[in-house]
Image 1: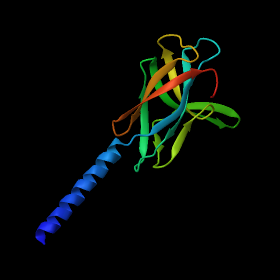
Image 2 (image 1 turned 180 degrees about the horizontal axis):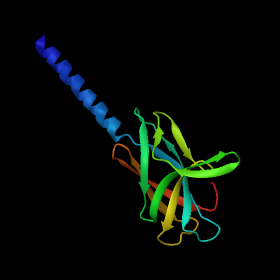
Image 3 (image 1 turned 180 degrees about the vertical axis):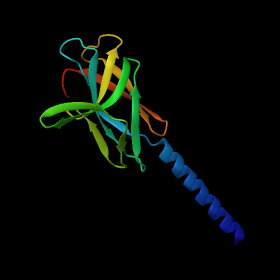
Image 4 (image 1 turned 120 degrees about the vertical axis):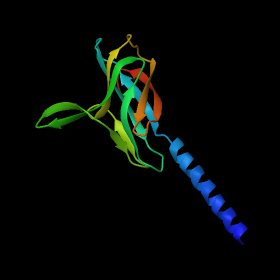
Length: 147
């Protein structure tokens, strides 16, 4: 009987370890990622996407980086008293089973200082950094306007 209990405990421990490993491996999913090409050459651009969290635990995006830009930061545009203002956002938490939409006029990525001119149809990788230290590389397509 004691052997049976030991085996059950060991089995439970293994399954909980597998579950924890799977949870740690679960990453958010980026969809419809695109960069808006400005009408004239500018030192700033904006990136948009839908970030879904299919994981059992919440995730938080705390920064971003790209080899295509000098700096990438998370920003939010808000309107107050008829004036549109943009501010940097320190973190973007996404609850389990929820999504965050990075879209024009709201949350978005500010892309400063492209290292080279971009053209419609080109693809750039922007890596989203999570609070737990993991990274999510996302391919963004350069477009004139929303897909």
